[in-house]
Image (cartoon, rainbow, N blue to C red; front, side, top):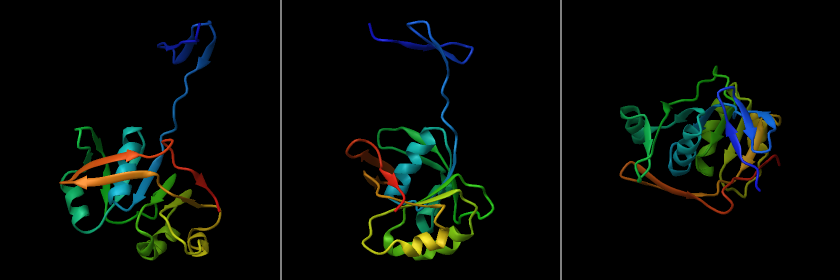
Length: 174
């Protein structure tokens, strides 16, 4: 029959065939999301739910809303707590910074992204413009680009959204 897996107090997985393997624990990452609109909020919710240490960088009315209640709530009642800031802390050793602003807003983020201590900076928006300016701002070794495959809406402060397609975002270096 099919192999079944169970986990015991030792932290080892026991399969139905008797093999023991170490439990796989996902790495907890320190992630900042630059942009607290629909797409940034959707990624923040799912990454926080997955156990990552998450900071959402917001501005204006959205920043004030999140400061009052630093939680993202889905329309179905699920919630995720997030850290909130009005700026990207340049000294924090981020594992990843996701940039989910609109393409025409990204220029304003480049000085902070250049100065930050992030290992990777992933720009997540659609553009037909050259990516060289973005790559040059953060350095080729930290630069990544992705197109988010989600649909999201903020309805009276609550998030409604879905992941499209195969449920993943393809990530690559161009």
